Image 1 (cartoon, rainbow over the protein chains, first blue to last red):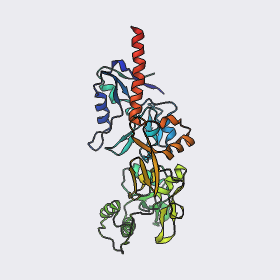
Image 2: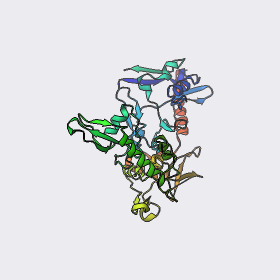
Image 3: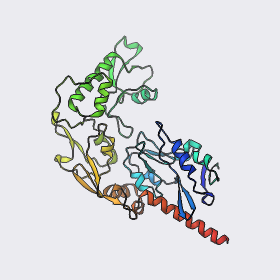
Image 4: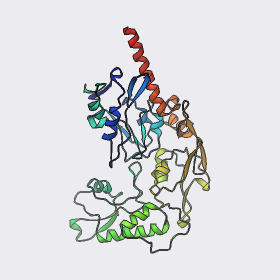
Amino acid sequence: MKFRFEVIPSLCIGCRTCELACAFTHSRDKKPGRSRIYPIAYADDKYVPVVCLQCDDAACAKSCMFDAIHRNEETGAMEIDQERCVKCMACVAACPYGCALVDDIHDEIVKCDLCEGTPACVQFCPTKALVYRRL
Amino acid sequence: MLLAVIRRQGIDIPALCHHEAIEPTGNCRLCTVEITRENWGGWKKYVTSCLYPVEEGLIVNTHSEPVMQIRRTILDLQLANCPNAELIQELAAEYGIHETSYEKQPEGDNCIMCYACTRICEVLGCSAISPVNRGHDKVISGPFGEAPPDCIGCLACAQICPTDVIPWSDKDGVRTIWDKKFDLVACKKCGKTIITREFADFLIERRKLPREYFNICDDCKRQELADKMGGIISQAEEAAL
């Protein structure tokens, strides 16, 4: 893996700009997709941006019976091959961090794909709580 | 295969039984194309592109008049077989057929016999359903026309079905498919259901996933992760003070 996606929760102000950036980046047919990143409050006005951790031994890929989830060696992201996915929801149920999601708008199972190397959430985060850098 | 190359070139040809997750079998025959070679002296051959390997020097015609005629005949027959299938109606209209010229099947159930459901069940490793009987009595069903004992209620068959004919329902934490009832795994925190108990057990056994991954739903898992990370941050902040 050549890149690392870092989340710095202490800088997150819960403005949800990342959610908007993500949804619009993944829009298709003039409809925004479901956001793959969620700033979730753990205490009063304190947030953690929850996003796919791109695990080494990823439960989503292990649970997929149709071999539809693979790691993109270039970006390090686990990506869902929509052509192979049959929407059985195994990855949604298996992901220990709940980061494989159902996109009702486009009728797809989605997860963070790191925007093929240029994550939109990182570019839009006003407080730099999200960092994507080369190792 | 030829179909992948044709689609990659942006040429739209219909294929109903094709899916990347299953082996091609050429059941629907709609992806038929005309092939020839320079040294064939004008001879042509009609093949299903999902099954035909790509070769050097192959000349492919995807929309010649005989090919269109073949597709029109298939769609005409399918329209008689399942007059209520929306997908077939739309495709047939695209090819200029609005009414079938054959006798409509009175009790058509919209199944086009593409076997996508049985093939995906095979890929999964269950092979719970299969074609039963022969000729026009042929149906997709469990063994002996009963509820399939090996079915785990994963819904792959219903999701892959091009004409959407496999009935299923999720109601009050119970999934019904192929006349079989399954308990859905309810989230221990909020009660949200995602997959069936049988499918979860199947994944735990076959893919060696820990059982605790299936205890709570994705929404609660995200909240739990935030709480866990928040706890670490709070501890660090206290230590810094």
